[in-house]
Image (cartoon, rainbow, N blue to C red; front, side):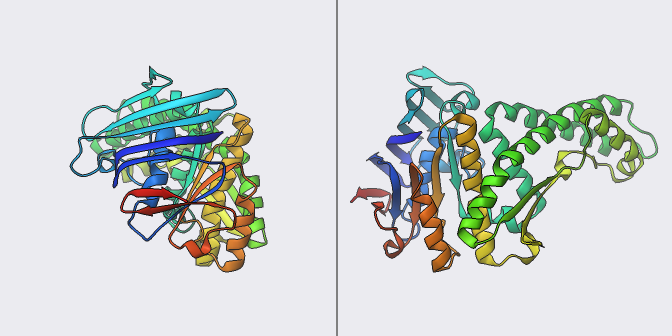
Length: 358
């Protein structure tokens, strides 16, 4: 899969950017706050209808404009895909694929695939478990876009069940709790299965990518809060076991919101013992592993976008990462210093939201 043309209009600080995108390694270079990350974010949003940096679309629209416009052509194994997106500062966005309207994100995500690494991914390695759970869900939904429905259904069930627990009178279990137990078990089991499948797919490739960069493998293991052959039954058993604690603490104590993703460097836990350089490399390699998993699932590689991936890496690890990227069909990378641009890369100079291809 290859992004061949990209147009951004009134997206972040890009008033009007049009680019022919070559294969191989493409480096967007320039000082901070000039629009390098915005450029990669625009390409990612075009193909996924989501941003790795913000939860809402309003910040994506350039100040003073009422909407942003993105357009791109992606060559896929099944043919070319022309994607057009109007991002509105208020109201529903408009998305068209080959001239036809798209109403659900997954309809686009099943046709074109992209994986993006950002510096904020460092929190997946060093941050709270919530960051790793978010990565697990992003990975599952990148691999199988339809799994978003199960995650949303679980989130709704969890909110409703927590509300019920908070509003009940102490010592009197809510009569409706059994209904929400079953909802939580059904959707929680689906989320657990999706996360487990995603880790099975990406962990070997992430570990190998890390070995190539750092010289030893990365341990990636999913630790669900509920296990068992019959997950739904296991959920209900665990909920029954924790009923008393839940009534006292007034919140749900069983489910995917208590899962963990274990990351280790050698025998040590990455969160507690990895250096900044090791953690930075691990964060990037998790995305590289996801990209490999997507390539295997979709029978073609996704468009890979890496925002400042060399930050925090020593020269030797930077060289090793560059060697690995050079073997990929297309990679768009941002970096602040032209001196570290790998030999043979196409260079885009980014200044104040304008891009000059060299």
